[in-house]
Image (cartoon, rainbow, N blue to C red; front, side, top):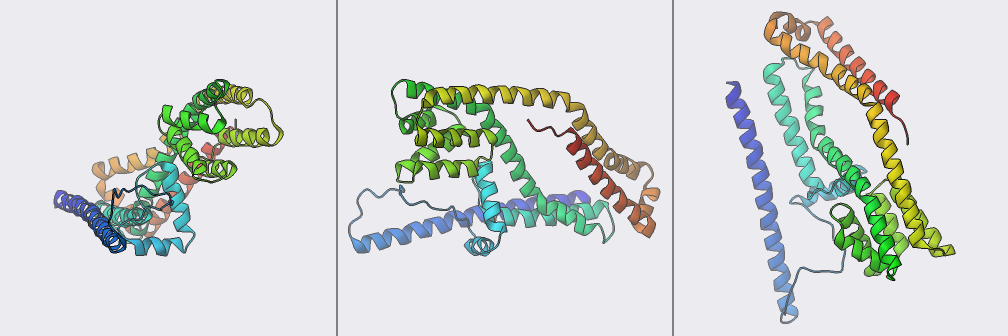
Length: 320
């Protein structure tokens, strides 16, 4: 019975995702046909391409959901999180995946754990899984950007020493560097190339990449543009500072690895022990979910484990 239910849930989620993608393609095809018909009414279409100078937002297959989210504070925050993570998706797709994940986790957990009080907990966990995945991708992408950023500063400095202007050096660095640094610098280069002031383009870079090193970089460029100076030398010094700070961060992570590992072990130990006891002594574990005192003990354990985990994280957190 249990494998059949799991297979049904997996197949249902796969069908929903496939249908969403198919509907997205059909909607895009219909929109292109409507645009071609309107262009033919104006005149003959010669060499029509998808290139446009207007900044467009990526819309999913559920524009009504995206418009509804845009009226709340959740929509812009989720859009910014998607942009920072570098994921090719939309807010409506994340909402659909969150609802599907909440349903799947609740049904699967309900097979093994009985009790109406724990279902909202599992629903909340499933609802947050896509957002946690986006946050994880954003952390990995920001860490990769931080590692590649000194190389970008060196490349900008060498290009300026060779006689190029800062904007030209920015375009060269965008073409030479890999993702994510190359992609972000290319956005800055294209924005200022299409008429956006360089300071505004750099401010948007700071919003997409919320790192201290990027703020130092933008501040150095703003000061140099106002007061003058050798920008190549400033970038060389900034690259050296970023490398040294990154080296210190690695040393700090090495010294705090024991504390972080202890926090994860203490957080996972009760859950692993509960799963093991469910197979060894199921009658005793069943009392925790059926008796009121057992449910109170489970709630207290979850709260205390969460407080202890964040307490350990705060103790080993060292700002560099």
